[in-house]
Amino acid sequence: MEVTRARVDAWCWAVRLFPTRSAAGAACRAGHVRINGERAKPATIVVPGDEVVIRGGERERVVLVQRLVVKRVGAPVAVACYLDRSPAPVPKERRVAVAERERGAGRPTKRERRLTDRLRGR
Image 1: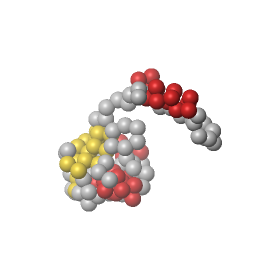
Image 2: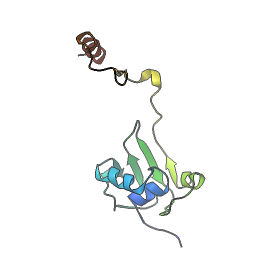
Image 3: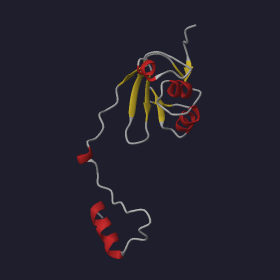
Image 4: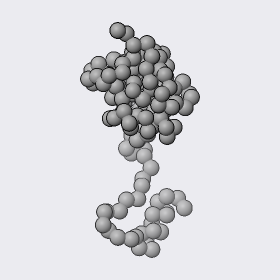
């Protein structure tokens, strides 16, 4: 039986864009998933040809729905279900430097706070 319509949370989980279906639903409720430019609720229906944009993590994922599945499939099959149009990730050398402290290092000193502010451009 060929599937003609699927919920966006179930489809995103089935093609391995999210580790769990509840994580896919939570991302939809938080507004991190868009279908054809419109904010999607977990029960929003996707059809082949729809563009799904997922924000979150380090980068934005843009995928074009090619085939619908509602049961979780293996990685080789999942890749065939969508066309990935995501922009290339930003190279590490072009990312903004973020001040990090070692875990358990305690509260920063006044000198360290000034250096952090200078790094952030304040």
